Amino acid sequence: MERAMYFLDQKDMPTHWYNIQADLPEPLPPVLHPATGKPVTPDDLAPLFPMELIKQEVSTERWIEIPEELQAVYRTWRPTVLHRAYRLEKALDTPAKIFYKYEGTNQAGSHKPNTATAQCYYNMKEGIRRITTETGAGQWGSALSLAGAFFGVEIKVYMVRISYDQKPYRRIAMETWGATCVPSPSRETKAGREMLEKWPDCPGSLGLAISEAVEEAVGRDDTHYALGSVLNHVLLHQTIIGEETRKQMEMADAYPDIIVGNIGGGSNFAGQFLPWIRDKISGQKPDLRIICVEPESCPTMTKGIYAYDFGDSAGMTPLLKMNTLGHGFIPPPVHAGGLRYHGMAPIICHLHQLGLIEAVAAHQTATFEAGVKFARTEGIITGPEPCHNLKVAIDEALKCKESGEAKTILIAHSGHGHFDLAAYDAYLSGKLVDYSYPEEEVKKAQADLPKV
Ligand SMILES: Cc1ncc(COP(=O)(O)O)c(C=O)c1O
Image (cartoon, rainbow, N blue to C red; front, side, top):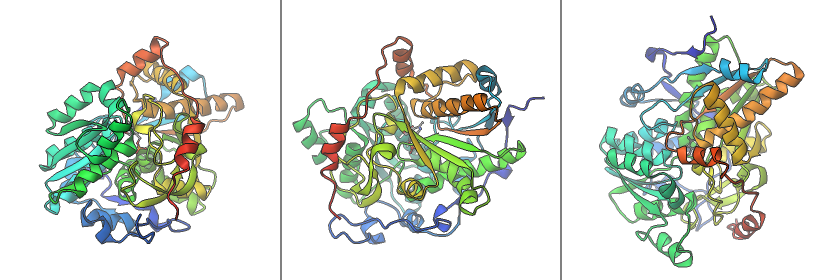
């Protein structure tokens, strides 16, 4: 029998997150205070985050226990299934073995609830009853709204204008879970108003929506802020994906040669690959390839520079050492809204600097072509972000066809595309356009990098 799904029993769900900071060959560069240029202290971050998350941000403990109350919430959708893509393999006529770990089966439809519920839980424990956030594609905003409903926390979401217009049903989902959602730039914050004065039709960006959410949180004592990606604690919470996958790949008697995933801020893919990269760092699996895929229109890893920059557009956040296109860069309005961010998780950038992971960029029409192939073989309508992984996984599987090698390819599938059908419609009717690398815009934005 060809076994196409690997189930993990709920009693075998991992009880700890894996912290890569315990195993990094060199420690991460410090996060700097924008005014002093000195490393930030827990007190600097306390207006925004609960202390438990601040501790996780800098922890070097290898394993961090998932609180039982949170595990009970995880069990409403976890463990997720590991699939073997036999039908795709046959369609490609490749000897490669293709697996995908699918995070689209929870209530909100992507990997984001793994950290949204954790962040709401720790805020709730410290008595915080209100959180602001940003959302690009709408997946993060949905996940935090869902988590707010689970833990009784009020959620306010600044949604990037272009996605707000492209995906009205995401807003309705957030409102159904009890959250408030406004388009960004908005008139509710100084950062939003300043942008609207300069550019009334601004499509928005994740960096700007972050500025608005941070500004509101800093201005109110009863409110904290939550970020859906980039930070160490967010990547930490996502490692439950890879820890589950390790157990499931063992059930399949397989080990990946290549792991492929999309990166917007880096959280879903890091959640899958960090639990594997420790084998590469330890020298047990020196040949393991980890390929990050990003859009050509927002090529942070392949064309950005590695430097200290702000996490938001208005320059309110601490400075992170990361690959950046410049915090003022507003990416073209591609459909993969979750990949339109000027920066990247410092952990991903650090591992890239150390030569442990690779990065490639893809154009959106090619990614939707792969998404349609996947829908017609495996059946799942994939979100525009993970369509990027499918494109590169298919390319690698076709290379195996040429070479005759039966490599094992593991795809980190971060979510469904049920709210992205307008993008599929544009692709199917030949209206989807590609944007080339906006070199001039990036040069302009990078000229404003903070001096450190
Ligand atoms: C389905 C999906 N995949 C990927 C991403 C990219 O974010 P990250 O790199 O943090 O996983 C997003 C972001 O919104 C998303 O919604």
